[in-house]
Every structure is written in C-alpha cells, then in structure tokens.
Image (tube, rainbow, N blue to C red; front, side):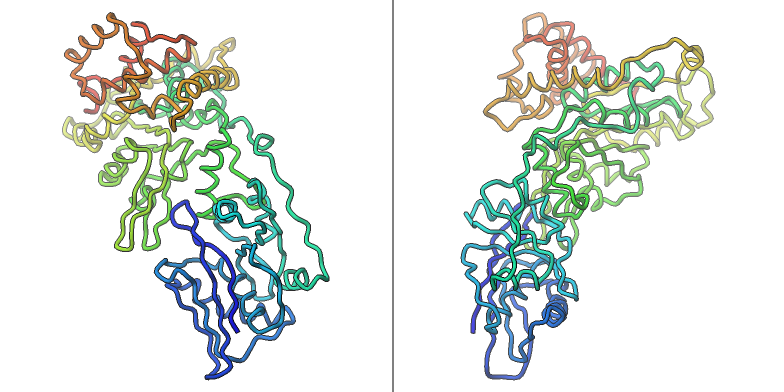
Length: 510
C-alpha cells in the first residue's frame, strides 16, 4: 500500500515542498530503504522511526518498506522527516486512515515517540501558507515560532501517539493562537548605557550617526579608551526592529537552531562578536551543507570585530562583497545559496602592536617597521568600505574623577535615532531600502539633492583628501543621515563638513 505525506526542505532561507512517499510491499525480504538524496541524519531516521512506532504502541510492519523523498534531485538534510515518515508507515500499513490532503507535517522523533524541538519551523510555516495548506502539524515546543504566521491552523503535537489518537477521533489537539508581532517587539537593550561612558563625546556622536543610518564604523584608539564599551553600548540606541526585519532575522535563527526555546521571534536587533580566531567559513558561512555565518546571524543588527587587524587577512577580505551588497552568496558544485547580510559593522583596533602610538601620555615601544606591518594588515579597499572612521583617545583624568559630569542616556539617543529612521523609511516607501547606508548610486542621486555650495565643498574635498568614488558617495550618505538626525529635509554644507570629518586621513591606516 502507498501513502503520501506533505513536508518540506529548507534551501537557504526559503522552503520547498517535499512529498514523503511510503510504499509497503507484500513481497520481498523485510527491509527499510530511504531514497531521494538523504543525508546521514535522514538515513538514521530509520532507527528513530522504528523505535518511535514500537514505543507508541503501534506495530512496525515486517515488510519491504521504501520511502521516497521527492523531488529526488533535491538534497534532504536533518531529522525533520521523522514525523512524516512514521505517519506514512502507519497509513501504508493500515493502522490509521486520516484525511491529510490539506495537511503539512514536520518534526524530529525521539525513541519514545515524543516530538523534539526542530530547526526551520518558521520557513516551513510560511511555505504552508504560500501553498495554501490549511493544517500544519509540528512539535509542541515550536508552536510559538509558527504562531506568528497567519491564515494557517497550527496543531502542536507532543508525540506520535497523540497524533494517532487525534486522527482516530479519541483526542483533541488545541490549535495554537495567532501571535501579534507588534506585541512582541521591544526596545533594543545593551550591555552598557551611553550615560556610563565617560567623555568621548565625538565618538558617541559618531556612534549615533552610525546607528541612525546603518553606517559601518571603525574606531581606533589606545587600550582602555572605551572602544569596546562603545561598541557594546551601540545596540541600546538602535531603532526597534520592524515586523518585516524581525521575521527576516528569525528565519535565519530558526534554520540554524539559534532561536531561544519557546520564543516566537527574535525581538531585538542581534549583536554578534566573534573572536579573531574565527575561520572564514565561521564568519561568512559555508560548509559541505552550506549554513549561515556570523555576518548573516548579525543581519539587521551589529557585527563587532574587536582587535580588527588580528583577524587573518583573507578572512577580512571576504567581507568586501557582503559589505557592498548586503548579501553573501555561497557557491558549491550542487548549487548556490544566498543569505542576507545587511549588518552594521563595528571594528575596533589599537594604532600599533603595543597600543600607544600617537599617545600623549605613554610612549610607543614599537619599531617603525612593526607599526607599518600592523597597519597594513587591513587593506585600503577594505577600509574604503567603512563609512565612519574615528579616533578614540584616552579619557582625561579630570573627567574620570569628576562627580558632576552628566551624559545622555541610551534611551534619549535612541529616540533621536528612531525618529531619523522613520524619516528614512518614509522616504524609501515603495522600495526595499531600510536605511541610508543601503542606497546605491542611483538612489543617492534620487534622494540626496545637493546645493551648489555642497557640490563645491565636495569637489574641493575630493582633490584635497584624495577621496575615491566610493568615499565620495559615502560622504553624501552620511551627510543625509546627519540631516535626518537634525530633522532637516535638505543637506547643507554643515552636514557635508561633519561627514567629511569621519573619513580617514592620509596618514591613518591606509
């Protein structure tokens, strides 16, 4: 007898339908075969399914069982096919006879028949909605994740036995209630508050501009000047995730298994801080079965690279294309997969190996050749892709010991950033753009109208500061963000002048 169950497979961040076909032949030696390009985890489902069926009180047929995962040319990975395979065997053997033509099944089985937490439920729920499948059966621990998808009925299942009893009419499974995303999204939080950062007004202003426009920022300064503290405080001033952004981020965390257990979505902007020993695949993504790397896990959030020159040069150079395009494409012999990577890069570095080159209080102990080699670890093209460059000097002693010094807290700054982002979203309505940093050249010409005085100032800056074409347009984008923070519709020479301060000087790291 033949049974056909509908399930799905993730390809990148998208999901495709997979038909799980189970045939039990009355003739031939007993066997259990899975075909359709299964990986090791799918192959091992034979043992999990066999034990789960027996421990659920059902009979495992001693026959020739063939399971086909169609389409056969699509690689299948992971344990999520356990539930549809087990149900297919029970149907094909005549132990249950449900009406499942409008149903979707997805989940990993444990040996006792229980359903375990399974990665990739959110993309599967959206696939079911797209294909107009009415009912989705998933593990109960994943119900919050699927509950954010509208127009489908989500049935949270605890075990294979519970599913069999539901189809036999002896048990009722309560459908998951629809979850409103707007009630979940919260203000971004951070390890530090900006009011805790003493001094560094120039650096805090640069961080505010970076947060308001999504601009990459590079901080260079002596040890203990507050670079790491600034970076870790930055998420606290980022605008609240929009619903579409939250779903983008949650899809990535869902397929990688990084979504916290019991959570429906990622409610705050991600903050990722990989160590400088991270491999290229760990940072960019890849592997034999390609998976997202740190830059994709930081999508719509912050990627903090401390000790920037200590990262291997080939690892840093692999960031070039994602920084420009906002996506990373991983190509393998079996095909190419694109992952989103629209992150805010925060890089921090000392000026030299000892850390005190140019410091007015402590002498540098490095030889000139050591300083040159250290600075050349970061290529010019890489630095040219970073919008904002700032020096973070040592904090003055008077400010450290002062009692009456007051600074704006993160909540106040985040309010200005949020208003600036709203202006950008209103400006870019009808496009895929979310912030000023995402503008391409044609968008800059459309949305950043310059006066004759601004053009004259930029022309002078190009010749005196040796700006590249990329740097020229980055200055305009930063000026547009400064104008948005000032709640002004037009870019003025004051905005251009401030934006030019954030470009690297000829004698700095380039």
